[in-house]
Image (tube, rainbow, N blue to C red):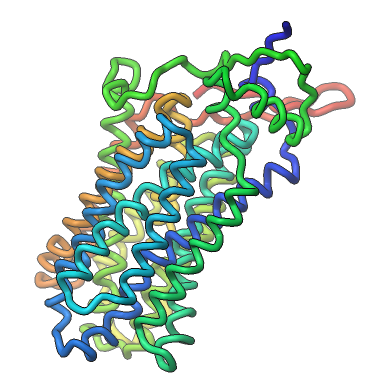
Length: 452
């Protein structure tokens, strides 16, 4: 019997069209994650009118969704390590799709609060499993790009939510919006059951599923003997356990990642929740204030993809620290200038720079977390870090409100301070993605990992 090293086969293999298709299919689930997560924001004005309630009456709804995502991130990652990333991911998609569908029948705030909490469990559980799954389909040199391209679909899903709301809300109302938002991920999950395979690295850990692994590797373009046994020499043999996150070899990186996710998500949500209000108070029109939020978010899509490419070349340490430093500098500059309607272009440009880098750091953190943890606890590790980060999201409305009461400069000073903590936490991570050097040889070019 021949023993095949799955780690070497995958990490050193080609970046095939089929692998790209699998990453795209995984990313599709996150587009709908972002869509369903943002539908409430689009529907809220219509709900307020129908139920004759102020925005403050929906505070519990917004908080319950965030708490559900926090819990779902931790539980979903653990389930993914136990039963497989594919099953956990598709289960999460079915969960948040069905519960979003049920929101269309909600008749009061209490029912809505309960439904959003349970939908949040599925929304939170999808992300760590999608990140782990996309990272385990591809060669090592393309892992940061694959994970980042998957997670960056969250703001793309949010954009789709706004476009869908603009088409449906005026004609059919908010209930139809949640009806469509629930049906779409359920249809996609049904299709992906036939298309999306399990992670090959997860399959390698389960002897009874080796025939399935052999078939998948052949579809990925690798020649595998019929009687092959499988091992993964590049991954530590660790049983799924949250306790392992705090074993001596992972404790420092786990604490650093949790701190990074917490303070970076705090920065992200302070910006997205309060930048439009800040600009409105500074005399900008409502349209320009909305463009400020667009600039803050859309720059993150560009920054995340660029950051992923640089991580593949320079490693994550220098790339992520440079992006964090740029975000700190942008926040400090915004805190030092007078923000007024007469400087709209300059303000929007600085928001695009600052928000883009903050969102880029946040998105590429998933790739870093996927690199830090081995297969046995990868989804658990990512899910735990994301869950801690969600606490930052819960804190952000209160922190942002306090800062804004002290003036625009305090809001951006706060973001500069939180991103400084992110910089320090990322600097303390030991197991960064290594830089890669292009080594030229006679008649060929090979890629070799360099020191971390």
